[in-house]
Length: 499
View 1: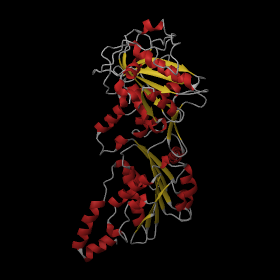
View 2 (view 1 turned 60 degrees about the horizontal axis):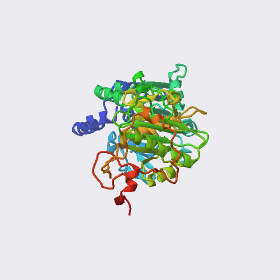
View 3 (view 1 turned 120 degrees about the vertical axis):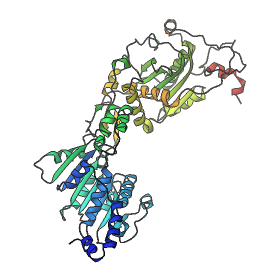
View 4 (view 1 turned 180 degrees about the vertical axis):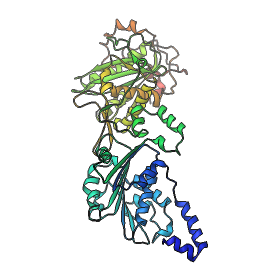
């Protein structure tokens, strides 16, 4: 007879109070979660989309593992303490305090790097660990272990640390995660699909199989997320390493010719222009990828290598002047400011150019996601002659530690991709600056790209020490408000801009 049944015989009123209290902490598993609970496999691998309820069912099974016998040891392991804390909170939501010997430690213990252990009255305990500090997990026999977001952990956490601790007690394990490519977690999932591996079982559930998740949310994510991200995060598909990140329709590709002066044929230069600049010195290429803020169509493309830094700065300045001469009301340079790009960005800014420095390492994943999504939805464009093969080959990889990276295949270039991502990020996230101009008489005449082509090489007087020569003597010094950005010439001629 169970303890609760005995309590009903001895004190029915108290037993009912306890039952009502327990119901507050109980969860109602949906059908997919019920499959996991009912399985008798020793090792279970759950591959599921976001918001499916992986942590919730993992916490439920872990709590029951502590309650199912005396003096049992259960581990909860996650890749970083932030994720461990999320699992800890879910465990506490499902755990009546009456089951514990002491009050649960505050979750701030994770921030301080202290151990967090829940001690049950039956002698069992649940310990919480981060894969960042695996040293604390050595030397104990474990009855049950949960690896939360397992695909983002290095393989050795399971293979060299957790799995051996389950051996002496014939303990069991639950690996739960959203997929991260076809890494070690994928191999464990495959292992569970093989009927010959009697101790293993595995499942895949897309987010939409959670009946508590509204269908409109799935549709919204399908519209908002890039295809590859949606397939992995929502559909729970194991995406092969190197899979192309970008996908587009025919209307996305501009088939215009790139002219000798770097302008894109038949693209009118007007409004504010953004110039994505990816810098290189020898092996790679420097790419200038220009586009219109209003139409998002590409208007300028230049690619070169083995050029000195002074010459690269001169070419960037030349591109800005040519765009202004063609009719742009302003030009913003979006430059990768990591490493070698930082001093060049500073030099250009000090010379009076509108420069936005982007830390490429920090923002790369966000820029990839933004461009991929907008290409699929027809909100961004690529040049057919602008190294389109780089975009076709640009892929996603997953490191041994489960981190997603994006790059070209080994030995190939991705400079055009980087420059385009910078340009598009500038158009969407930065926008044109709000500027008060300083000239009553616009010193720049609008030209069609065809008119510029004949004098495209007439840059002999544009040297690094005198970037704004020749000056227009008729430029007024009288400031007026206008909707366009000032030219470098106007900035130099306006005394209000000098201390």
